[in-house]
Length: 157
Image (cartoon, rainbow, N blue to C red; front, side, top):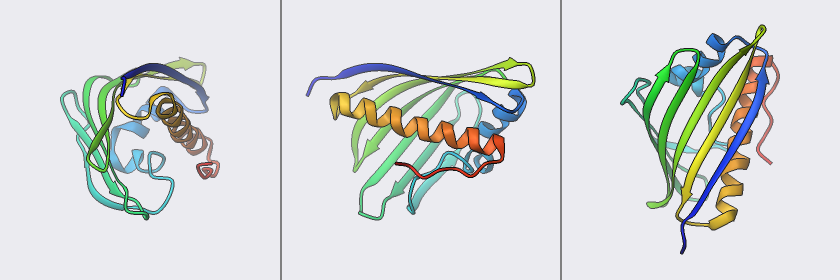
């Protein structure tokens, strides 16, 4: 299959300071409140080393037996301003994609403009894989917005 290269950007205004939004990414406990699976899963491995050169992994088995594996390396972190990482996504041992993720946090008064940009090479699934990744990523970001607003997070639809 042909590699599909694609970029998508998700922007949101959060009712929180850049420091508070940054903190939601900086520890496994904070990130786990909004970056999670949309259903019950068995976590096989969950590593989190938030520093330049550090690794993050979220390896899980889903109720139907599918195994997913998110493996990331942090390349640039500027406190309260940006996070840049590269991640590989696997399903049942097959590499699905390689993505460069750039997260920018820009102050806007007492709020933060979050700009999440992903540049990916999709090895499996073509355009449908891109649309699915953008949909799932939007769900995660919307969970973060809800958390910052003190609202209930919505189910993935």
